[in-house]
Image (tube, rainbow, N blue to C red):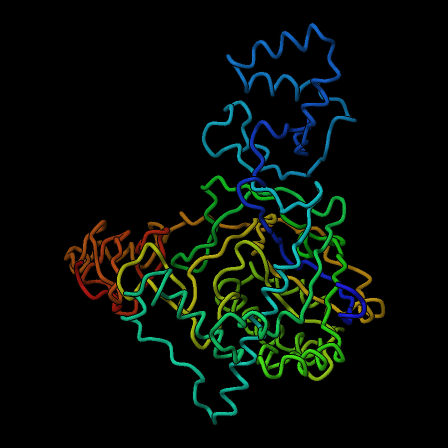
Length: 496
């Protein structure tokens, strides 16, 4: 990128909630890559080669001789001998993760595997491609709304019927992926062919990689936020440990990261359009300004944020999530001259953020038939902040000039502990349903616990008995394959 080609705009990225952008298999921290500090508060990445080079020749020879018999033992021995100047990096780690990451297991199983953040040059970064992907999805949503308005309310593209969609292969010719590509081509006014990439308006958008400040990440255990009878509950039985950005929800000042966003200069676009007119390689639809990109971001993600609070975090457990965005009420979001916009990026941002609401079909691989696809997911990955569930991926993108004038002078205090019942919490012996078991109708089984039933065409397993004492509006727990969740009795179609 050069200043002649692009007009650069400066932004700051503020992580509202934990964000993890992974780097694939090579970014995982295995036991041979780290040790825990003596106080178990940090993961320390050790330069094992530097330790080996420092040892005297005899000790080095003895250690290397043991490698074939016990390679893990050699690595552990080098880690234990590391001095402060041989520590490449120290990453804070939460107590739950430190307790679960059991280095004595010698690398077997998942207990000691840590999913590290994406790195470049040894330091964590948020790749510009992650931000550009969020911009692209939001812009496609903007184009959908605009084309629908121009067509007087008629959808600009028709998604195949659900039965046809479910029967399509995920990849290849006549697949769901090909269908999604056709939608994108329609909205961007792209013609099929070798010049398709040249005509893509996002070739005129540049987003630089974002450097994460020192101490900007930490490692924590991740749980699932699942539906229970009386709301959502935390299921933290899995061993999932992720390095993620510190955030506003954590309390204190979050890492504030600089972002460079460029739009190709207008005179360059005009010149190219003139040269490419006959070849028809220039974009037919242009991104006129950064303001329109911010507006599109807010429309797409603002709707998702409100739904996130309403569906998953609507009770007292979501108060802290609500408060973390309220700190930034001074910034204008949306409208003709927006100063900021919500966005969601990275791992566990979930399919809703990466798809368009009018044609959204979230796949549930464990389900069968048409029930495999839904308008939204049923769970969220979260970090338990002293009883306050923190979902992944939410951030605020703010114009740098607005940040200089309106940055908050205070942030949230560290979270005060609140009870956070686990997913296993049930109705209990004293519940209404439990009391009905002692009645005459309660002894007449309709569906027994463990039975396979159909719910909206989808197979599930009952987690409790259903009797004639249950009313149609009563809720019972069923398992679609990813943990218990409640449904109404009148949603049961019958035995599978």
